[in-house]
Length: 161
Image (cartoon, rainbow, N blue to C red; front, side, top):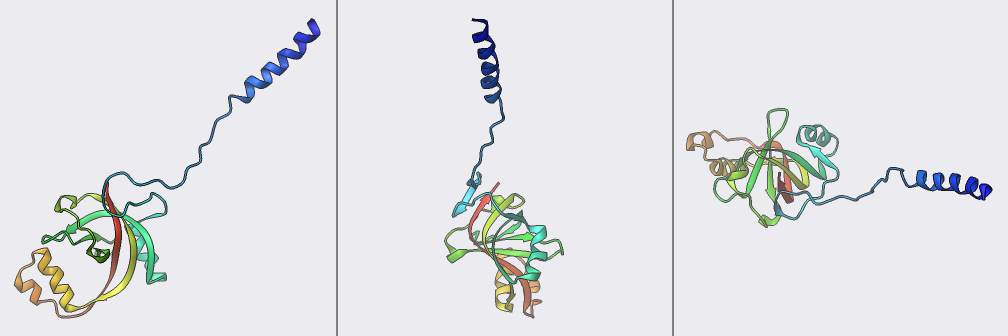
């Protein structure tokens, strides 16, 4: 009987020690929670808007997700929004095939957009159109006379956080 107890105690201790290890849960990308516009957005591989300008210097077109603060929203239909870049310029975000729009209420809020960023040229006509949508005066709109090279983003989905 004593021999049996000597065998049972170490086995019991071994089994109790095995059950106390920490469990690690693996998970894949999850859908970001928030106010969704267009397609939902997953929470993986998100770049901060502050780093985007440097990234785009190496590659003029990239599919990616960008997180930043909404600087302005189209006052007419919510058909575009802007985000400030660290160099003081803005990045205009348009929505793929005009399939969705955003409300004025997201101005100043953090947002994640999923789509394609490009270094592009904006014509004088398009600049004037955006200026009119922003509510600029006719005098300010008339001052736009040259094509401008800018960073643009076409989003297939966006989530206001």
